[in-house]
Image (cartoon, rainbow, N blue to C red; front, side, top):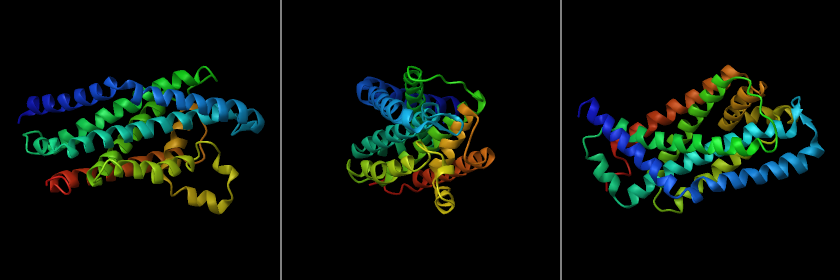
Length: 257
């Protein structure tokens, strides 16, 4: 296939992915808005008023970047894992793999679909947050860059989960027992300065720490970890995940029955 044909294949996959989650927006977009509104009310307004300032900002201002990033992570991940596993379960992915479309095009089609949902949900959650606090963006470049990198990383992670899943129950194991604990222990609701030295160092093994703090720096201008280190770690995990996804596609492991 030439470039034009590859582009048509890529655009087709992306359009299918976007149409899929927009068709069921009450299940894919609305729940995030409702869930984050509850977080804003409970953690930001009720509990936050008792906690006071954190990192030089009100508690509401401090948690908003983390909650937006939580929505991006979970939606980018869940969109790809559910969609690709659905194709795998119905054996539609086998037809896709034997088509002239390259494996890179197939992978990036699903990833861009997941990224688009992550960005759309981020915009919805950001609009909801404006009812509770005011956002003064420190660096739009860093905000946009971190959003794109993070949504790409977790869309790739969702793809890996979908490849290894054997049933619909399997696609919920990683989000429940791995992703959710990493998010809650990634500094969404607290500053790492509050942790003892040992646990602060242990937290640095959590990739979500770098994601949350890089985004918080872009919004508020403060971070518990060095921004260059955070960006380097996100880039490293993204490249690693992309390479492994390509290995799975090229080898056909757990895909060709």
